[in-house]
Image 1 (cartoon, one colour):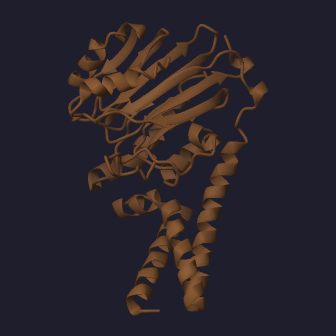
Image 2: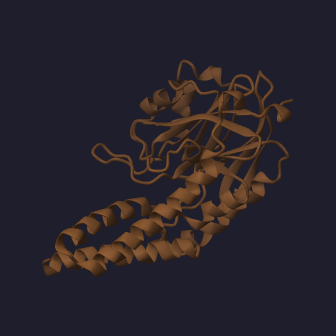
Image 3: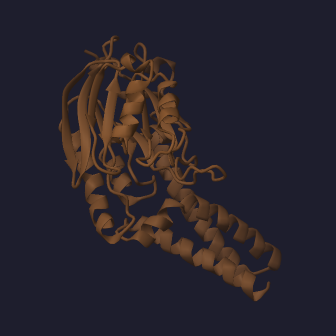
Length: 324
């Protein structure tokens, strides 16, 4: 094995080991570690390549080290998946017609607001939720010919990327704002025509992109758990969480009883960010989390013009014992 290939392989193994240990000990209060943890499944794939290189070249030490990383990452992924897929509904798990909820980070500097509005409204979800919602983007939504299908609205238009909003076909009861440290969350209660009652929380916490925001990142995600406990209804928390499945703050929410709609349906690799013309999303920052009493029937992603995120649509209902 040439020196440069050996260096590349060992660099991959060592960096992966740092990421694995930081996940195991729930350490994520630095930009560097947050970035490493976000791509841990991809690091696993790279280590599979290292395994083959080590096997071909006969480097037993490198083979052992890279196999260990693959095993650890497989364990991390499997443990998270197994804790979720058991909540996947069967045919008897639904109760009446489901409600569809959409979320998209529309990107506050979206260059094509009118097309973005069409992409969102064409999904015809029962509830539309937004992050990075600006006056220009909201005006584009209002100008759409079918905007009146969602007459119930709760919108907070903030400067830059701080705007959030909810449009609903169903009435929004007790609509109010909550705080995730320095960011606004929208809280409301939704009751569908078929009697399903939900607490809906729309979030867009801080991203760990600089020292100040990283300091507020974990507390803002922790605050989501506090907000959810304020309601006795089954809850759906949806938004751009600026975190991935592998980050400690999100796994802490799982430990508090929230579940990921995507993990329930086995979707742990598909990303929602960053979106580009030639770039496939590599990390999932956009999530729909549910509490006990919520049945997740389906979840999928879709593309929105001008945004650097994919949008998500989740179809949910409540279990019969919590229907009104």
